[in-house]
Image (cartoon, rainbow, N blue to C red; front, top):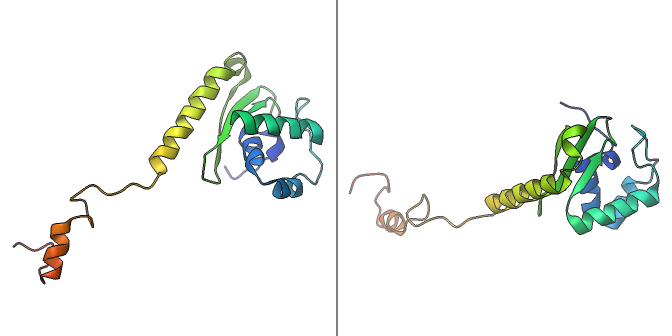
Amino acid sequence: MGESFPLHCTANGKAFLASMPPQDLARVLAGSLVALTPRTITDPAALALELERIRADGIAYDREEHAEGICAVGTVLPGLAVAVSVPLPAQRFYGREAELREALLGWAVGCNRNSAPRSRPRGAAGGSGSARRRARAGQNPGSPR
């Protein structure tokens, strides 16, 4: 906990980078892309291609770019400045990318649906017409009639 990692070599970091406006992305990537493993993308042009793919697919991968033996799948939650990833051992990742992609994107859609504002059902707190009528009539909505 409390540790931070470069955005260019993690699944959630790359998903977040792909969601950024171009001017912000250029500022963030102005420095060098540090290699944490032999698989880390350090070439700006290669990273730009990867970010284009992520924008098109909605999913980012970390294929042992941050830590050897660890891979991850990541995405951004639509409408929120939140990126999430699911890391797992490399031997459980390779060959399952499509399955992991579908599971994470399905979860993200569910989160987005659950975080959308909802109208209150009739009779719910603040939504009851009879409580408002009693309040206008001078009755305390919580008191017996």
